Length: 127
Image (cartoon, rainbow, N blue to C red; front, side, top):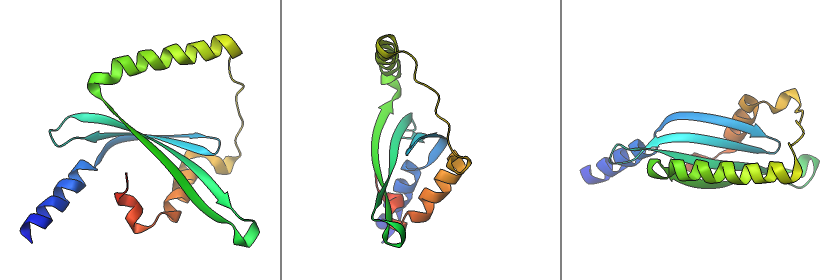
């Protein structure tokens, strides 16, 4: 019993978010979460959350499709370098993206609140 409690405490600590930033982009929200590993190193968890609506009107069901990647500090420089390279390529090939205007209801705070309402208790423990 004591071992089980200890495992749960360790898992909770591993999942603790130290710092977070949410980026609303159309139907997607990108979460940049700084977390702490078991050996106390900080790492970045990037989550893309995309809203999916199935059905219409009263029969509509809203779910969120999520994808995660974990980026560790020893890879930051190479990741940023690669990201800058491909973003630069796209901008050179197609120019700057036009700025999108979002409805006021589509702020990050409202999107995060809306998403958290639809989460079940067990979603907190999924990766």
